[in-house]
Image (cartoon, rainbow, N blue to C red; front, side, top):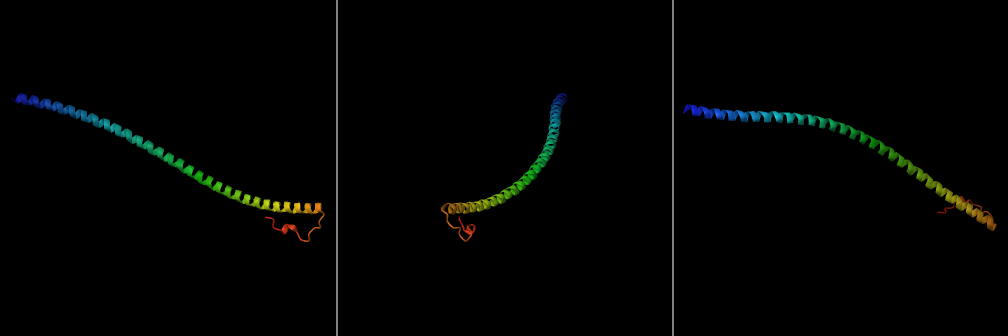
Length: 121
């Protein structure tokens, strides 16, 4: 009877040893997988740092470009305002010249005041 119990205990012992071996193997595989994930995380963190640096450079470039474009637009507005004023002056000069030509054609006497000061707008 003791032999039978010994055999049963031995079978159970082998079975437990096999289970333990499988669990040890699984733990080693999980450790290896965990190490790979750790390295993957390190690589992703390095890549993330690189992307942050690129993003910072892009933000700086955009800020510089926006500042440059703002100044360019301001200069264009000033230039356009100046050109509009020049156009008004030339329009007045053209009207004065047209009036002088009309007076010459009709042989009218020149007026005593300067036509430039008349508002033709």
